Image 1 (tube, rainbow, N blue to C red):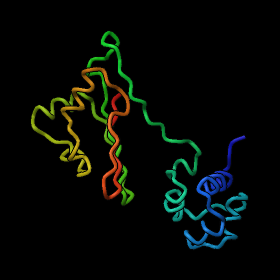
Image 2 (cartoon, rainbow, N blue to C red; image 1 turned 90 degrees about the vertical axis):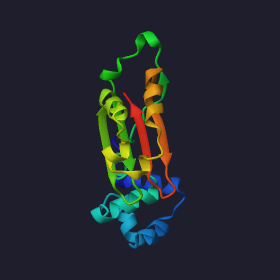
Image 3 (cartoon, rainbow, N blue to C red; image 1 turned 180 degrees about the vertical axis):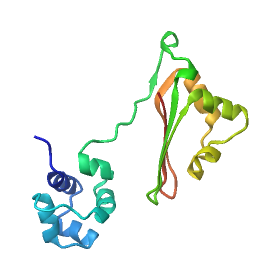
Length: 166
C-alpha cells in the first residue's frame, strides 16, 4: 500500500524529532491541523507546502509523491564504451534559496562550441551561482569518461547547483 501524504508528513516530522506542536508553531497553524493532516482527515493548504517541505527537508514533489529526486552517480566510463560528445547531454539544476528553480538541458556539443566562442554559462542560464564553475574542466572530465553527477555546489546564500552529464 502506498504511503499517504499524511503518513509521509508524520514520518518526516518524527525523523526531524519534531512534535506536532513544534511543527504547528513553525507553520503558524494549530496542533489539531497537523494532527488532521497526519491522520489523512484533511490536507495542508497549498500555500503551506513549500514551507512544510523545507521544514521537513524534502522538496514539495517528494512531500506530495513520496518519490525522492534521483541524482546520477558519477562513473568513469572505459574508453571503448564512451559515447561521442555529440551524443551526450549536459544537465544543470539550480535551486535558489528564493525558491526559483532553473533546469537547463543542453547537448554537450553545443556547450563545447559555446565555450570555444567565449560564452559563459551565467550568460546562458542567467544564474550567477554558476559563475565559479570551470566549464572547460567539465568538458575535460567528460572527454576522459566522467559521467553522472559531476558538480554539486551550495553557495553562501543557499543556492544549490548540480551539474551532471548523461
